[in-house]
Image (cartoon, rainbow, N blue to C red; front, side, top):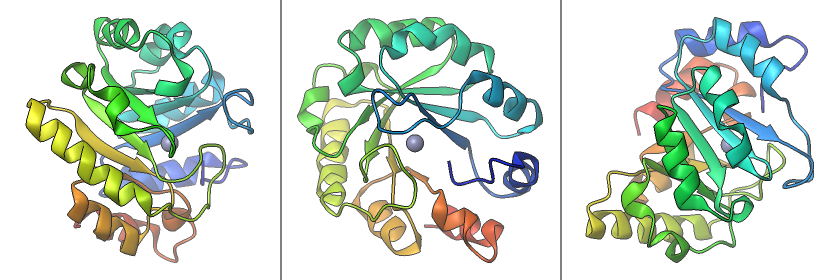
Amino acid sequence: MAANFANLEPDIRMINESDADYLHLDVMDGVFVPNISFGFPVMKDVAKICRKPLDVHLMIVEPQNWIPQVRDLGAEIMNFHQEACVHIHRTVQAIHDAGMKAGVTLCPATPVSTLVDIIGDLDLVLLMSVNPGFGGQPFIRHTLEKTRELRELIDKTGSHAVIEIDGGVNGETGAELAEAGADMLVAGSYVFRHADPKAAIAGLRAL
Ligand code: ZN
């Protein structure tokens, strides 16, 4: 979301050469969130030149309808919103059947407790630390408490889910999140507006 949409290739090549573990793609539909980003034709071309695994974050209504298209991109992770999907269990199964890892995303006001009955089936939980829809927003500090609560739930239940955080991540908030139990950090503006994006990625990777 923070890359140069007029010329994505140099940014993707930078990510290829960096310590990043994934390329995170924020898909917005203008219905679930008040913004539209990009869709499958763009992601198809991105996937052709990206050498990192793709982490596709769907901020869209009815995410269950798009599983084959996400699979056809060769994505490793499909993230969809708890708030956008009535049948989460069925959708998680369908994502697994398509050969991908399944992640459920929570908006800032959605409690961790809503995942108690599905946590054992999830590969990933993505906590939004800003309201989804726009890049460059300040970090919501309550996310730290939520991260600790989710860590406790995962450890207590023996779930193998990893904790991913998206929004307002930088060197300082990243360190606090890692301390609170986060496994994966999504960084947009912090990396792409940094004088040395590869160094910014390496710094986050080392937390
Ligand atoms: Zn995202």
